Structure formats: structure tokens, C-alpha cells
Length: 379
Length: 146
Image 1 (tube, each protein chain N blue to C red):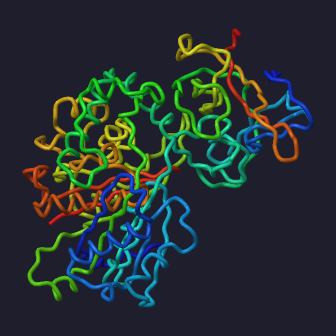
Image 2: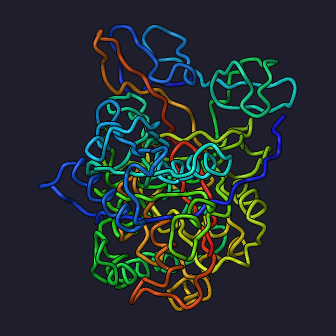
Image 3: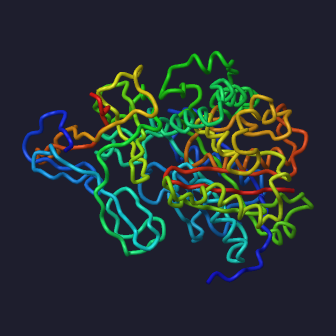
């Protein structure tokens, strides 16, 4: 039986980011070095302050990449863990770090994620797995079928879903770290090459390279060592995987399940959320996740996008930095990048992308294989 | 009886043996299998030792229907790297009478003629040869009236 614990309050002591895109002149180690230096500078900490580190990535980067990539910062004997949880690797690292501090085991945790995703359709089985001959191991084809089903069930026009990409690229045009800075029209999005009907190329996130880092700290230590800097808290962090579903048995979706626990542990309701980062690997992904999070009623997500509710000036800004769609998606770094943007908005440092009300943010990051993470952050 | 749409040679092996069970050495006859749970009555795809719904071990293997209804599909125009079939191809989600959805390629059907509600049959297909020169067999769907 799980014993309830008094959670120690956890704050985000710092954030750091390496741009997302393609960097043939750089190694993964270079990107990690830049992102970690960036978070140390942002937090005004040194590496010796870190009690535990989590390195998050998906593709093989040799054995013990975290230990090797952090070596240039010092050999301090701390526990270092390498985490793979598909696209939610970064937020899984955050989940681990949050709970290790909340449980009182550590005071200061570094979470660093870096990736170079190869070009081409993403599959989840191993490179030479013959299951790929069946044809269903194709991430965007799976999203395409979800999109067809959604459009049919809710009479949602394809333009309303493709609008997610237009919004994302508009937001990314104001983001120097984004892979793509060019704005797209709806005609550009729908006129791009078809990947799997009805998903066109510009409705699918790109494959990318990049790195992102954060340092989480106990609030007690943060208040002790900082000069009155305003804390930004991780209020809750939840992770769930899929439950069995067939035509008769309808267990809860993993996002719904994780979100329910996240709201409860944070002591808030969906209405209290000011801004959101969700997993928009495909345009339909953003709409589905907003509904599963209880932020928009089922079947109305497409209307919310069409009406501008999820734009920078809307009442529920979503993926304000461009999301996976336009910021890019280096798998192991993406979840940490989502936290980076939420914190940037709460600090009111988002420049042209700054939204009006940014006190409480929610991060939802999915992972292939049925994973969903939900993290709530507030000042 | 399931029909083989390409001739097989040598010994045939199922690419996904816990789901597709071959009933002959040539890979011409086969059946999809599922797991039936005595405790919660859930039926799931593949032969499992534990019920994926309630984790009970009071399970039995069940042969699944060879006919179903196409409930969803997409036309894949950019295939994954290992895919060695024609492109574009139709990826179809089929609902079996047992209440399970099974996704695989729909063949012998033009992308302009596919529709939800189409009746389909299970078919077997050789896709490659493994390092031991065995024929690797997968299952696909085919329109019932083809």
C-alpha cells in the first residue's frame, strides 16, 4: 500500500536551451554542453550544487551517454540516470526529478535532454524489425487515422485542424530558438505533400536536433541561496501508461488519468490553467490532448482553434513557442523545452510571444507506446 | 479458409507469431489468435499469458474471425524505411465480431474505392525471406467481394 507523504515544495531553479534544427557541425556532446552551461548560468549555480542528474534521450547514443556528456562539468560522484520514454523522455526526467526532491531524497536535480532524430517516418520497433512489414508501425499514419475518425465523429473540417500548424508557425516566427521561423498560410499547410491522408507534411512535426535543460530544487534550498528571486513551483508531475481498451471495455485514456491526478495533487481545476504545452506531433494531436486534459469539451477542440482561443491573444494559449510543429521535436529534449517555455512565460520574458495572463501552466507530453505525462507549473 | 495471395516457397514463418498462427508449412493457411479472459471476459489480440485488462492468468487462447468490417483507414503516401510493398498503400483498421480492432494493409483495393463499412477478409502474404531462407508471412485484409 502506498503511504501518503508530505511533499517538499519543488521549484524550477533554472532553464537552458540549445536551438532546435539541424546542426551537422556540432556533436550531441556539444549541444549538451551548451544547454547545461545555459541552465547553470540561468540558475546562478555551479555543477557542484547538483545532487542528481537525469539524461533523457531516445535514440542510441552509446552506453552511459549521461555520464559521458556531463564529465566536462566535473566528476562529482552524483547519481546519473539515463532515461528513455519515447517522446516523453524529457518530462519523464522531470517527473523523476520532481518526486526525488518532493520525497526529500535530494535538494537539486539537473534534467538534460538531447537528441538527433534521423530523417524519415518514425517507427517504434527496432530498425530491422520485420513487424514493419505489416505497415502499421508508422507514427503519422496512426495520427492520420485518429484525425479521420475525429473529423467524421465531430464533422470537423480539415482546415480547422490544419489551423493548428498555421498558429504554431506564427508563434515560432517570434522564437529565435525554433527550427522554423517562417509563417505558413492555411493554403501552404494543406497544399504541402500528403504523408498519410489527411495529414500533409506541414501538419506533421519535423525531425530535429537540439537540447534542453532544467534544474529543479527544493524550495527550502532555493529560498536559502537565492537573493529573493521569485520561485516558480512544480505543483504536480504525473505519468501514466495505457490501459486496456477494446470495443466493449473503455478504460481511461492515459492523459485523462494522469491529468486527473495532476489537478488533484496541484489543488487546482482545469479552469485555473492559463497556458498549455501539449504534444502536437501532428495537428490533430493538439486538439485531442486539449480535450483529454478537460480544458476543452470533447468534440469542440477544433472549434477552439478556429475561433482563436488557443492563439497568443486567446483565452487559452497553446504551444506559444511553436510547439513540436514549428519549434521542432528532438525527442529527448522536447518535454524539457515545454517547461522552458512555460517558465519563460511565467517570468514574463517571452518578448513578442508574451501572453497577458501567465501564472499557471500545464505541460502534457505523450510518448509512443501509450505514455502520457502531465506537469503543472505556477508562480 | 484464408487465401495466400503470393506463392510461398521453402518453410514459412509468421512475422508476428503470437498474433498470426500459420497452420501449414507453406504459409498458405493461417489464423489470427486472441486471448479470452475467464475472469473479466475481455478478449484481446494475440496469445497472452496474462489478461491485459485485469492481469488474470485464467485465460485461454481463442481463434479469431477471418472476416471483419473496415472502420477506419488512411492512404500512406510516405512509407517507413523498411516497408517493401507498394506506395501508396491503404492502412486499414478492421473490427472483428469479437470486438477487437486489427490494423494491417488493405490490398486489392484502389485508394479511390475504399470506404468505411467495407466487408473484408483475412489474407496471408509473403513479404520477405529471413536469413535462413524461410518465407516471412504477414496478414493483410482484402475486400470480401474481390
